[in-house]
Image (cartoon, rainbow, N blue to C red; front, side, top):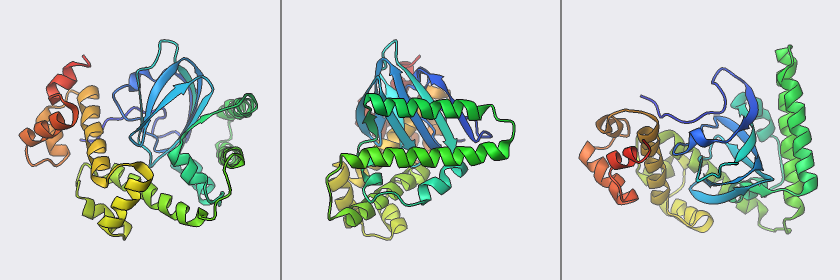
Length: 282
């Protein structure tokens, strides 16, 4: 049994573009499995990115990568976004090439960008290019253009973001810290269904549990255990809302010692039993 997540792109597609209100994703994590770009075109909503809540309104731009957790809730009737979803092979080369030292730190700390009129014009032009690429018959050329287009997007965002950042003498140190944090997020996303022991993640990062705790506290204002708990609760909620899988099977999938322990754990975290939470979405 696999976690059920809302996806904007089918697994066999290298990219997908379109418009959506994301209402079908409420209560679920959105599966990026590469990178997802969103531009809010109307209305408002609340997004949770890496367990931090952000308001979304018209003109906001979001970049969410495979190591992020992303979900939306409480959207208005008129809420709508343009989206572009890319498979990992399309973005791999672009993200491995150098960008400014603070780019990834800024992106992960503030993943929602409030665009100016000129910045929105740039994004609209980028989406128009994607619209044209979507109808290309030569798939080899299409993939090459997609890779170049995505790299150009990163360079543009990097330029606009860094224009408003003060000079920092600690750029390399900060970049290393955020590299560890993003690796931690990726490990949590991959393994939280199997283990919630902080020691496991610290060992995979080749750092001590104390250092991991300090990193998370300093940059995220949460402990590693709190992050693991939030991700686990999100996984449980995703099963409860999007499937009819029995609660006992969810407990087995997430490697709880028994179903009663998972129910107590979920109630402690949410104030509701798993069944009551499931009924609230019916």
